[in-house]
Structures are given as structure tokens and as C-alpha cells.
Image (cartoon, rainbow, N blue to C red; front, side, top):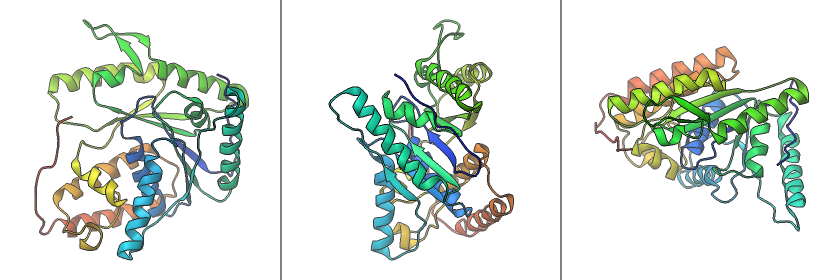
Length: 309
């Protein structure tokens, strides 16, 4: 498959791509949280959903718009586009049409926005590859499990030593090489241990060891993501994120400590992505978050909504 990388130019939007060839890793959930955090930090954000079959990010934004209209509340929205797969007379014609559609969308938004967030399909197809080639920052969420780590590298079952580069990691290496050949540029790759669950300490150590071994070899930074919390499924159904204001108007109930915990870990993840924000705006947002946490915690109903992974 031939992918023409996207040449980045100064003054254009910073492109954040969420990608993993495995589905169900929480890409769209993290993407939506990053989108809302960026907007609340005063950034102009455009979004592109390349997964026209699942359309999870698109549905998330639609849920958000529906809630705002139904409850008559003010919420921030990105400039959103969904690029569909094309069924042409040949593979070449389909890929050419998909490339043109995505390129035109990017040209239309990149000069007037600070960030462009792209959610890619959780499957190995042309649009998934094409989306990765656009990245300035690539975020790859994966489950905190040895099975999911295999997309980066396979290990000896006895020693857990890395024996072979995974298919997805090989694709990232190829995309980086193409970018260097095109304009001498590259992108930062951040791997997120997502949907963290209450697994045993032994399993956590094995996963941490494998990822720590892979990080310098494959060239990614490793950060912790969101917990395996039921609250994120509740937020998705409403189109909300942990960064939104929680009250009876938005939730239909008083927020619990689970929402406080979700906001804390979401803010930590957003901070560790190190996206290029204006520092004054970012710290203003942090201060607002701390004030919300103080008021939200007095008093609230407490319950544990962690679920097994």
C-alpha cells in the first residue's frame, strides 16, 4: 500500500491522531476528552472521524449536541467532519477518492484552527494508514494487558523478552521513514496504558517491563490513561467528558466521587500528552479544575464504580 505522507507547514493546525490497529482500546473516549480539554483551554479545534463504520467519535459529538439542545445548556463543540470509505470501481480509484476527501477536509480547516484531532479506524485499512501519516502527535491507547502489547512487539512466553516487532509498530516505523523522506519531519508517538484495571501486581510488572523495554527501541513515550470506570460509559451516552461541569442539569443527578476521580486522571493524561498550548490559558484551566474539585467533594455520595478488565 502506497501512502503519500502529509507535509506539515508552519502556521497550520497541530494534528493529533488517535490510532491503533486493534479496536476497543478507548481511542474515541480519550480523543473526546482531549478535544474538550483543548477547547476549554481556548484552542480552536477541528475533528475528523475516519472510522465511518463505527463512527464512535461522531456519535459522541452527536450525543453532546443532543444533550445541549434538550437541556438548553451551553457546551463547546469542535468543527467536525466524518470522512467515509469509498467503494470505487477499483482499489486505486477508491483510495484516490479517500485521499482527496481527507486532503480537502484538512485544507479547509487547518489554517483556521489550532488543533486538528483525527480518530482512525481500529482496523488495518487505507484510511487508518493515511490518518497516521498526517500526525504531529500520535496517541496509541492500548489495554493494560499482555495481549494488547503484542501490537507493538511479541515476547518469548517463558522469559517475556521481546523477540519481534509487532505489525502496528512496523507500520509506524515505515510512516516515520516516509515523513523524513518527504520533508525531514516526524511526529511524537505517545503510547497510553488505557482502561487500567485492578489487575494483580505481577501482571502489572510484566506489562510495565515489556513497555519500558519497547519504548526506547520503538521511539515512543509511555503514559497512564483512563481507568476502567463505568462513569466513562455514562458520560459517552450524554456526550459529556470528565472536563465538563457536572450538575443535576447535565447528569440528572448529583455528581459522585467517581466523577471527581475521572476528572483527576483525565487532567493528568491531558497534561502528560504535552500538547503545544499557551501556558497562561492552560494554567487558568488547571485552576478552574481545582476549584471544581473542591466544591464537588463537599458533600457527595461515594461509591466504587471500578469494573474488572
